[in-house]
Length: 219
Image 1: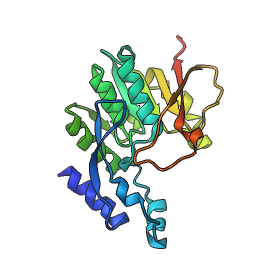
Image 2: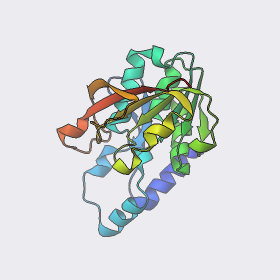
Image 3: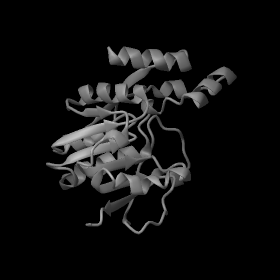
């Protein structure tokens, strides 16, 4: 059972850590996330090393993913009736929100097998059906929209802004780390207040999520 596999992987990193179902504020969605009580102590040196080597990012709902989910719920025309791919899906929050908003097809894409297991578990939890992919570049250029949340935390990932439009006609990017990038095809849509769950007590600046939209230029 995938949730048990996820729990085993999390326990291998942080012995007493537990996954629990968390309701996401401002949405009707819920996810299997790291129980917040496990964040109330300092990690020992060995745990810190393991977490840095294999961060369980799929056990968090990051601020940009939550902001993007809220955005799609408020404006479902972004995805209704469309083929959508969620790049770097993590917990699957954006993919699940797109499916709930009426997307024709949604693919959750992530390199990490545990993230894809988390997406499967969370899709079941929310009663939606997703497709799954571990290789964005193996996908055909057939998507109407590429969703991207919390991928630009490393500026080395900025070249991906061009690649998103190689597999989809449009891209919708949400990010709280790199908020002020410039790109000829991407236009800012504004900012949203959000937070990461479990709450990491991040600085306020990381709770402000910027949205950007790009449309592929016609040949």
